[in-house]
Length: 446
Image (cartoon, rainbow, N blue to C red; front, side, top):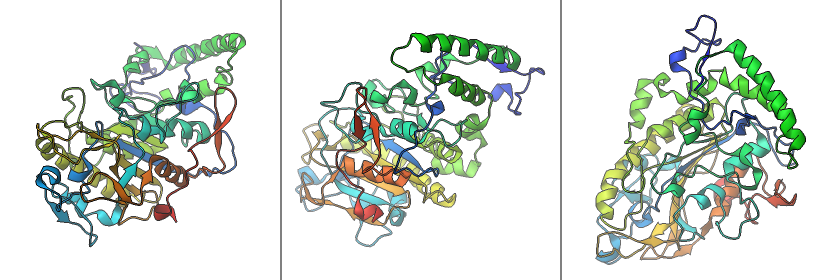
């Protein structure tokens, strides 16, 4: 373990106390390749303004017909135990356990007709917009990795892509986003990840750190000479930025919610870090951290909230979790608008699939990839609407089916990336479009 001290052994050079110095995770000491430190590519169809995306993944597949698409005309064994409530937008109703969001529907878009999912318990489709089958060599990169590659850091001391998804028993739910064929350089920075012990920098002064930097440059030159893949190319300049990050307080301050207004912290609430069964920490404060990160300069932040795989006691579990989700997401909506970020920060809330119309013998709902739901806000999108509809039983999309790729095309456009022009090269050098032929949703961006 390593910790950087300055000569007075109490504070860092930028005034940050050693007690509060960030324990940097997910850094490899040899090479020090950080996703936020890789060079951005200049490509046609890219605007360089600082836009951002926050992705809130609901692991396990939330039951759409108990949250945003209640079916009161369906038989008892389908409609469930909850009642709908009216919202701020006339004609839109959502679950009674979401009263805070009901008061903010003028700032939300609810999609009731997400289609194209597969029956696979992971975050892959929600992070990439693609299914996990038939991937190219290296695999499809997630949105955060694509943005890291194309746009690079907005602030050299803040990672462009941060993954907050906590560790869970079912590991695929913990996926914060994979870089795929773009390589580990564009993987998410994980402040709570397993790699955080790699570099705590205990006992190394700033002078000694400079010596270590020079040594790493020498090592990297040798590694580049013997590395046929070219992955080490250009690391001298990236190392320079890496050491700048380690001695800056910008990232630390973004992650430290103790610095936030107590009233704002109370608005988000405090979650439960414990896993239930195979996953599901309930960390509303991650939503606050996500806002702080994008405000500081991150371009994409991913997080996962609770566990929604309710094959049994669906309604008992939702009675516990929906009020927490309601508080956390509504706080994020209010906060983004209050801070003037509503034109720049896009937020999407969704899970990997929906749940069966029929309630099973254990009072639960099983996997149903044929239709699911999502909520979006911010990003300058047109809000105060519902897109799509399902049939009377909530089992099929009957109006405006929406594909994951369409949502991704919309998010990319909000970030200033034209999906009809911009490509990234895979491991064979072949240019790949960011989505498979989908265009931004006209209902959201015109």
